[in-house]
Amino acid sequence: MDCSPQGNESVFQGRDSDLQQRASQVRESRKTHGLDGLTGDLAFIILHTEIENQQAAVEELLRYTGYELEDAFESEDERTCVLKCPDSADVLVRCRLKGDNPFLAINRFPKSAHVPNTRLETLVFTCEDVQRYWEIQRGRGIAFLTKGPLDLGSYSFIQTTASIYTGNSVGFVQWHDKAGGYRNGRCRTLDWKFETGPTPWKKKIGTLDHIATRVKAEHRDPAILEFMNLSSYDFEFAIYVPDLNSITNVARLVRARFAQVFTSGIAINSSGAGTGPTEMFVKNYGARVHHMAFLTDDITAVDAALRQSGLGFLSDLVGSEAEGLRQSFSAPSPNTLLVNEYICRYGDFKGFFTRQNVTQLTLATGKQ
Ligand SMILES: [Fe+2]
Image (cartoon, rainbow, N blue to C red):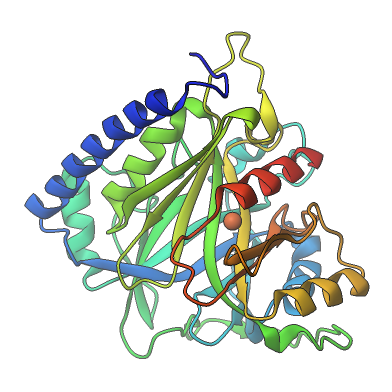
């Protein structure tokens, strides 16, 4: 495929109109099968670490995001820390204490094999009726990790097997009582204390705005369509950065606070070698979540304070108030392999991203 920066717009528009057409078929299928309105916004994410890195992973999140530790407990199989931030999806930082890891095979890549149990594995969305969801989706050929929905005490839960395109599992939760309780009677409390030191920036960092997953160039369309088939989200727009062989694609749901982003290469190199930072990331780490983006209203102060506190960064603070958007990328955490994005949208900025920022941030990830 011609990937030169010049004369590409019509090629890209052609690609996107194909995708839009198939997206519209997915919307139709969701409607026909009774999936419309059955699932909603992101409720929580499940982030797995190595056993020895779990506390450090939690400590980093407490230090560098607006999240607070609400609960820490263990069952026979796993150890879980629950982190919460007002009006935001919860973050469960978890490690397996026994049993097989169904994600193990897709975690072994040149730069991730040293932490083979580390992955943001599951994005869990709200669901009005998990049993009905499972019955419908099983009929559509969707593969799940368990034989049926699990009754986990305070909620019902089902999750898909890891996607062959993204490596992500998509989960669904139906709360029985109040939302956000993760314990059952068999859990033992962990008396864990975390020392984060002074974090004066913490109150200025808010909700989880989006999560970005990196996939191979050839998996861009199937990854987006698969996610649409599983959720109520729609593909909204794509920003092409031909110079870096990268596309940033945004899927959103009306009235949802959370957006799902997919980043892929544009061209498939004939030698099979990745070109550009996006393809290289997938080659080095496998398809997986690249970053979690947290909203802040005062990014100038937050970014400066975090840098001063010792947090490493891949990028400078990019964008400007005049353009409506400023963002920065932290260095990846050794405990989670995840980058934190800090993002501020100013005033009446209507666009979700700007091409200039996407370009600069994508370029910065070449350092990974
Ligand atoms: Fe982002």
